[in-house]
Length: 466
Image (tube, rainbow, N blue to C red):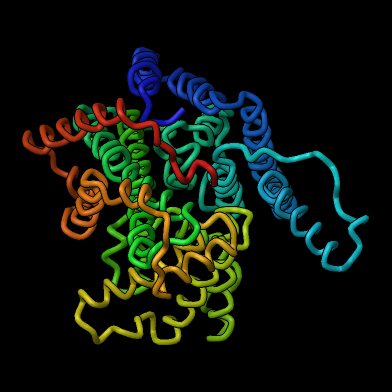
């Protein structure tokens, strides 16, 4: 079930809000947990059992850390190893077997290849809720959060449907107090609605059309140089509006339920450097990696060389977190290498003395090249696409594809996406103070998005696969 679907908008969400607000305070978390499991199990009910197991393991180890503080390292280790083992198996088993078989083939011993039919299906959102659940145990271990005694409260935190399958990653310490006590106000609910409507507009009116352009060019094989650049920029627009739109909807749904989630995007394509980009893009992931991986590895406390290694390693692991593919590792390597390079310059870009507009364009160019590896299905596909971008190519037989991606409808939405990215305020600031004209503007966008949904068969969420 996706937010931008009629079954969610006109059946699931109204039902959740009705039962949630009619329930007494002591039952609200149970109701929210029940509906969250229904939401998660919509695609595959068996996935719920895995999430329940993960939740039970971390809840139990959190209680054991409190009961036996002298053995807290043991219980925290059990929880982390268990969570990472489950994530590793479901996310990387197929990738590992494919590379093992390829290695055996290169070594000339095909009889040693894995010939089983067993294939692992990746559960939705496992990367997100595993990191969330791990943050609870780590925060308890560090003494930065108190143990949750009520299992339903903890299960509600892990399974909360607004951010369950595609984030943002809500760290336990960010919502610990809200799980115990939070307010439900008309102002908060109204801001939540506007957040949701803006997110829906981003997704349906901008991400989906740009995604169609990107899919057409990336799936075409050999494309004209201009078309290749057009498709790459379209994908950069798609992934931003797709993910920031989902984050807006998740934050909005949280506000409707009384929760305040942290900002997850801060106009990242306005960044003046790659370092700044990662302070603005997927903020919940970048801060999680910093606090739970980069700093424990030593951060910048063990000399310059170790700092550069830590930055590169964290981004490589961040790339691998996104998916089991050499493309994601290269994507993470590009960002990690450039972050280390900028760190050597004092966290500034090599082009810091250029005009700001040029700094923004160069940063976007670097991010754009990395997005090619992120989007391409295979490593050879990525190299072939980059060759089309940087080598003058005039492809033949692309009349139908060009007729689609350069139709007035798609060109208009492509231009509109760029204008919104670089000229419009972000949703967080736009909704901070509501006025009647803002509300009417959001209702108009939402209405157009609903109408557009009736004509769109293309409606994926990119981060559902992570």
